[in-house]
Length: 446
Image (cartoon, rainbow, N blue to C red; front, side, top):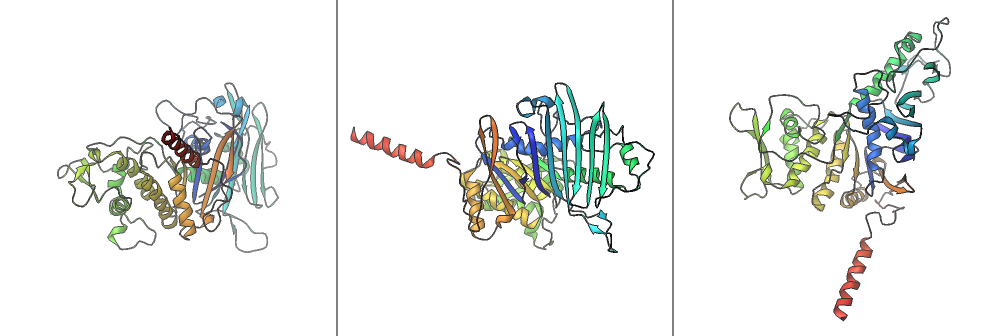
């Protein structure tokens, strides 16, 4: 689970400072205030890690596919600066690594890992100035560029450098991508095995990151599924139905309750009922043995059953959100952009309950950006009702001032109140009501 992100000179952010990420993290604010950029940083690192080119410092986008397409590297730096840094901190869910204790017989497990990379960008030149990993006060590894692509490396275990071949110079250790160590660097500290572990843990955490964009695919009358097991629902939700079919019968909670309503498909159907979007939901082949499937729903108990294409746009837009939340493995992180798009205000509020259920019962982290006041208000209510702890939610307000993005942490108390509510957070509702009243009064006088 990601605990913190930070970046400097990235898009409209000069310096975010450390941004705390909770099990449920929400970024709110006006259009073009920098909300999406906070998510894009993680997606940029993810698609870089998935690139097959070890010499590609950052994969900023591609013509046909990618989580984000940010153009060339110099286009994403803040006001054409020549350097930027990207950093993150995360929990080590699989505690497979320990630092040897000095006086104890047992090793001391490492629970968190910090990473930051400093990148130089100038026209068509892009290279890593430095990259750093840190595990508390017990372990650190740093690679620094000197000149002419010569790099020096330093690894410290409890403040001391581990054994290494003294005759080998610490040069020609150019990093792999923006986060990895070359074979020369690994060989330099070959007796420790630390460096490969760092890369592996970073790639593992980014591999657990899933994304659903704001523009979901329009519903279809038929869906094709030949038994494949999708890793996600697609960037636009185009694989939501195949994922739903692939997950049929799977239990969705860690306690493996025996209730039939705890199965994957049943949980999705129940949420559609709870959100008042449908009274029934099923996916079935058009004929026995066919690879073509149809999604059928009833709006009310006594309504005629229809295809999803005849149900209204809302169901098709929320379905990928629900499927992704219950399809990804436990321990995953989900990034959602505007999950409330095309949804009625009451359904927007209900999504907050979906997210609370997922973070509490599936150990899945959710990071979202939204314009929905209704979603935020429901989160506040659930905190007041003690169904969501303030520590499990990190909520932020983004705003643009003088061409630069700024972030305000919304201060939540135990009763769900926001103590530092920004002015006109969701527009001037009171002002609109007063203006409408005054206009009506003037018409009556006339």
